[in-house]
Structures are given as structure tokens and as C-alpha cells.
Length: 216
Image 1 (spheres, rainbow, N blue to C red):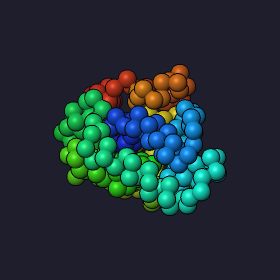
Image 2 (tube, helix red, strand yellow):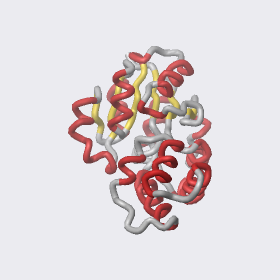
Image 3 (cartoon, one colour):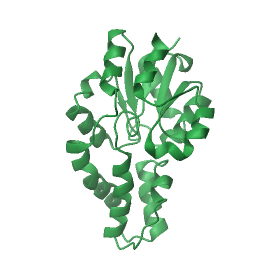
Image 4 (cartoon, rainbow, N blue to C red):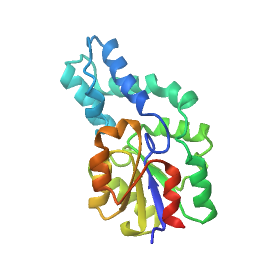
């Protein structure tokens, strides 16, 4: 029986993935990289903030520090998180459904803590979360199960009693290998991985609304 849920944030609860595709290219353009490769965002979306900043510097021979890369990218996307990024469809309805049944939930994300906090507060969800875990606390990112195990400890449940809802293939694989029940949730950005997501995850849902089926 599933007793609680760990949600990813970007691409799962909020519709933000295009923002990251745009910011990666804009950052490289302003730092003198002509015609940044379109696949660059696909590579860095699997990385932590520290890993992606190091990748940019090494891959494109940038003459700046990791700290500068991290801070500048955060600046470029801050307005989007504070003012514009919307929830995915049915997010509020799903959380209401879970609250009515006393099912706790929280967020494990690779997004900057400040940005995640800002968007959740603007959308009225911050206080509803039992936790917000980021790679600030778990710097190895979602290629390792640390962040999911940390969430399980907060929830006071075993992995097999917790649903991990994610849109990215590498995160689904990590959670599943660690013993969690996994739900892959559709996002346009993960469409190229859809076939493998459907095969890998315990459940594949085209919208957040469908998660309710697991508790009826």
C-alpha cells in the first residue's frame, strides 16, 4: 500500500522545462558561444547545479568561475519562477485529494532551493509540502538515491510504501532501483523517452489527475 508521495518539481508539478532549455542557450550566447547546440539542455538536465556549471566551463571553454555560472543562471530564471511559471494541470486537485485522505507528500528536486521556494510560495503550495529537498542537501543529485532515501526518512515510511512521481527517465530509474514505487508523469520535454519510461516505471500517467487511481 502506498502511504505517501515524493514529487519531482520541474516538469512534474510545474510547467517549467522550456524555461531551462531557453536559459541554457541564452547564458551561452551572452558568454560568447555562437549557435549553442540544442542538445545541451538534454545533457545538463541530468546534472546537479555544480555539475552543470562545471560542464559549461569545460565544454565551451568559458573564462569564468563556477560560482559565476551558478549565480548568473539563477538570475536569468528567477523572474520566471517568481512571476510566470504555472502549475501543471490538475496539480491542485491532486494535492486536495491527497490532503482529504491524509496522505503526506513533499518535493525532491535538483532545482535551486531559492527558485523552488519562490515558485511554491507564489503558487500557494509551499506550506502544503512536508519537505523540500534539493541538491543543496544532497549534492550527488538524482543519479543516486540519497535524496529519495532522505525523503523516506522524513516521511517515516519504507521505499516500497512511497510513490515517487517523476518526469525524467534517469530519476525514475534511480528511484525504482532503490525500491520505491515509481510513476512517470508525462511532460513534453520527456516525450523522446516515453517508450522507455512506460517500460521502466511501475505506472505511466499522462496527467497528474490519474495518480488518484492508486488511492481509490
